[in-house]
Image 1: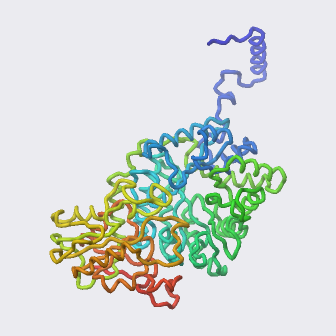
Image 2 (image 1 turned 180 degrees about the vertical axis):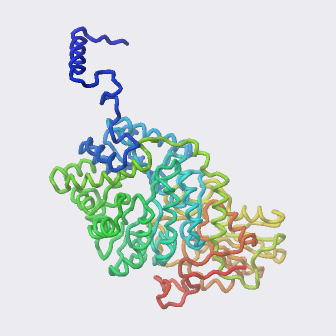
Image 3 (image 1 turned 90 degrees about the vertical axis):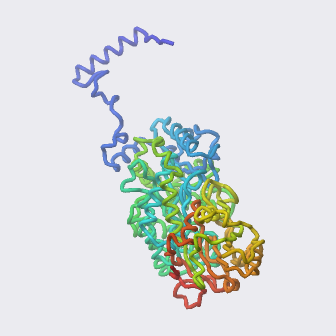
Length: 616
């Protein structure tokens, strides 16, 4: 359809143009007209702080509040909701994935969300966050690396940095630009269900492994394969009394600073872009509302210049009652939280925060400070210039190169704890009975935070099970027989290998205050194998040390495999001696669960001390 401009309007426009020319200013159609120039914030040649200030000066209060809002994708009726509420961040909680769950679907979803954000007047792109805590673990087919406790056992900061780089590439290949990792907690009680997310029980190990920040963020955040890293969970979450998830860390400030703070100091030195506040409390005061620890210590003393993000609905816990309140929001924001994760209640959050600002309980200066921190990271990531998925990186998801790196990490993470009579390494021609519920289960060996939040059993994602790795390495695969319960073993076998331990769990569900022993199925399997008299190798798949002191005398060898991820062949590499075991314990191994918490230097006598590890 063609529209005609009325003659009277044409005359008026002509007169205005003549007046402009007479004044010596550029007229309509001139390449120098202001209308033809992009605003300064869209100029990548300007310094980031200038771009931020220009954009901030153009934003309404509604747009600023939107930037402080982080919502789960499942809470959005459609991508257009982002434009309606000017949302600044979207996330996928554990298991929140597109259908089908493929790298290509993730990229399509991400681009649709960015298109919605770019449709707003200021075209501010969104950040998209995930918990890619051991590889891009929400995406089926991605490379799943060992959980942090295994990488702590490997003790190789360069390896961890390489894993961060590979993870960033796979994330960027799906568009996702923000990782809620690394977890820099110092786990002090193995009953805690998040122990496997810690690199180790001493501050030195998580501090050394903060190289993951550099791997994720690259030499420059603006590089195509770089993503924003998050140091979490600030601070002291690994020291809660009784290992209670989201519990209370009852220690003095000197211990907090000596044990739990050093990894964050290192992450900040490495330029980490965001910090996530812990659900837990310090001496009864919730971290989400802790002005001293967030504003004064983190942002003031440590000089953190990135932005602080809350944990999943963490602000809603401040008053101990369900449902956000204006007071909770103002307490958290005034304490230093810049972006609030309100996974399913973003509309109410926006309304409440606006009311708090209009009432003066949250100042506009505080809102502007939060926006400066968030917007600076978006500019540094290059999102304004490259808001969509770099499809050239999509093929890196689950690539052979990344899986080989994961296999290397699995082998490096193995800790040999017992090896009587040189039972290991296995001979290439040995006849082997493999048993145990964790021998042939990708889901079990990957643990929690794999495809879904709590993880699962079975073929949750493509990979190589420990059994498959053994069969592939054996000189003759027919020499390897599998029986889950360990039945049928007799003197015709040279050795039995039992792959036992924990099944997947994540935070909360993983807390084990009442014991850390093997389950009944494992005990029955081991009893069957011991009764045969065949030499017994136990491979323990677990997210922490287990209480095995009353069992270990009946085992000839014990290998701690932790939670190796999708590349089970790395376990077979060590069992057969293709790689000698080099891992050492990143945590003290209890002689009895009654010793918990047990840590290096506390005077208790463990089954195996921190740093222990045999080789051959």
